[in-house]
Length: 231
Image 1 (cartoon, rainbow, N blue to C red):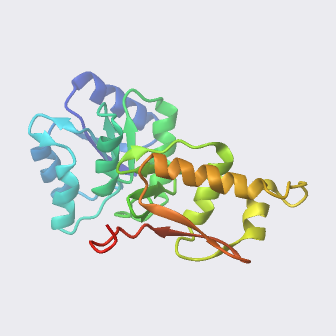
Image 2: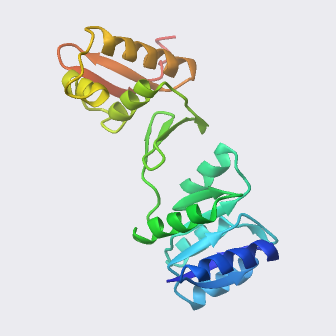
């Protein structure tokens, strides 16, 4: 497996190249976008490890370059830019993964191997309803790019509704997912979780609604903004 490492810090580049070589990868190292573009046009790489703060621009520009010349690749961003909007930006532009520096060497190797099992050019699966985004791999929710923190059962409940957005999820299916088959469930337990989830979504400004479908279950829909006549 041949990797391209785009990293301008000599010590970091040398250390990563040594680590990757020890794990049987062939590694080409370049310090900037210009040389990275030339390398990608001259060789076929199984994955690209990409720093963002390079001397001649943001490393994410390389993803756009590969898309324009029809050279898809598996991009793994390695960056100290760790704010949530910055990570989301990298993923939305087509990176398969975004790893914040400093990181554990074993974790990097594991994530590279996971990326290599997926087709080149395929990013992580993400779902969006209204202004809420769900990252299927990390199992995180974001509202307008900001992380949404919930209690454990409310998180599981939102996952279930979110991945079936627009469809009715039967009460029985929700209870089995939240509690298991053999757990004795209090009669109003699910309603309590639904109520807390709705309150949390309202507090955080989520443009989604959890609709009760009487006699059947619940459904997640995007919130419909009020019209001028409604105001």
